[in-house]
Length: 381
Ligand SMILES: *Cc1c(COP(=O)(O)O)cnc(C)c1O
Image 1: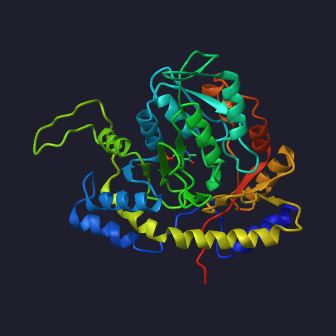
Image 2 (image 1 turned 180 degrees about the horizontal axis):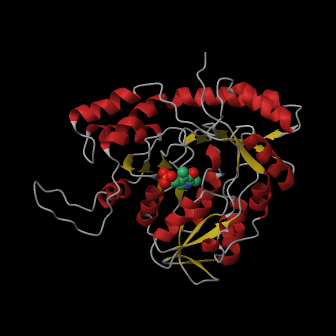
């Protein structure tokens, strides 16, 4: 089985010695736009590409305004702060995620509470969220409080794993009912949508990442999007040192951040955004080839969940158990085929072991079994 799986993956990337998990592709205007910033000298914190990108990404994600920032983690951090997350409050999120999700909560001096995921979407489970709220939620005039800790539940932060959409409409309804602002960690899901609605357009605000391993990249970068004009304006203000507009005076009305995306990076992401649909289609083709080739080999390609129009970001297999998983990882990596397990659950890490969590049945099931396989876009002839 292992040998066959390796063969299938290798056959999809025949010209590559080492096959990586997810490589960036610069097939369009990337060089042209980046050179343009150098020739114009506008490489830093002011420039036309930042403005252009913000307009285009807002339009693409069907949100009203976007603020480009230095990375996805900073985008989550600021989005949470704008949702009202403060010191000694709590944020409901999932333990099955990349560490940045939890770190962004801690940067606001708040605590994560880990809610289980669904097995099919690998994202936050509305069932588990409801069970948690029914047991611990205390809805008061000034918000929802956790009966166990006494702390205010200031936000809910679901994440769309590998671009699969979690049951975000149900989560959104629950959050509204319990008066909890929802922020989407949409870092992995640019180009995905749920029941026809774009990732990032469901909550009060959302964060995307353009790190080098994501579906499109600015080298490093992120964006905060929102449909609330006030949140959007504040996002721009806070991430640009909270400077009030003036012809020459240094007036700042609070302690902001220097989180602005440089124009150099914005140039790259403008060109990448033009390529997004081409990349998505190429990856779709790869997924469909995997689907037909893996049939009958005895491994389970993770299926696209119902209601998701997927961006095909990172493809994954579900192994029988942890032992099979480790054998698979050893074999493929020794063959020059890069594969990786899904993340360790956050509470396995010493920094996050003491935060409240529910039973985590599905998260633990997936943690043992899910592996990512090479998912880069290829030139489609
Ligand atoms: C990549 C990623 C982030 C963070 O993005 P950076 O741009 O690397 O800071 C946050 N959350 C998830 C789920 C991610 O995959």
